[in-house]
Image (cartoon, rainbow, N blue to C red; front, side, top):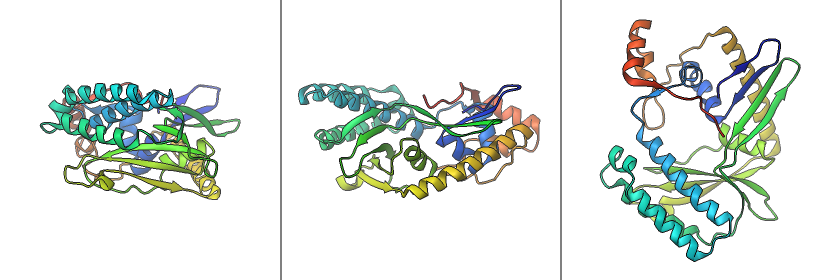
Length: 286
């Protein structure tokens, strides 16, 4: 989220979990992504693939939310399968045959979860919620959960987040996205919905779900910590002093801005930006 400041008015800072985590990992990464709005000119394929899978699931869950019949759902599933197998992005950017492999995995997913009876409350519905406000500042936390469902009378409602992966990797639940979603919707639990794209995995490995549960005191602790992080980000924005952390190794690859940070002077940085990056619109949750 791009910070907004208006003279004689409150300093307003709007962040989502990705921008918040970006600053916590490296202030310079935050600056390049959230302030300068730079992205690699060549798209990073796992992000492209994940966005396509999420869009397909959004269409399918919207149909389920509207109580489509099995026959209607099956028509949508076949439509999505054909779109995925013919996707130019999947077949040109990814490994040969990736469109067919992903389409087949989602057909397996649809078959497994077609009769799941969670009440679907929202699909890809964004929110903005005030985290903290006083006479000088306004801190807003934003997000857009993939799903919000009613887990039943004994559990209440909570978010479900889709995660596609090429090899099994169990996420740690105490992170901004899951804690923030629960805080924003007054929930204490949710699910991580893993969609594995491995060719040699068993059903329980490639299609699995892991629950996360928090105590109200843990969510409140996240809130208070996050207010302090917002304050720290605000001070950095005002002073325009962004530090490189040199924590460049990420989950599966290097940070996408290493080409810039490795350069010894501003001239060579600008050359890298010209040759490998592009300006994009500010990131928004919704």
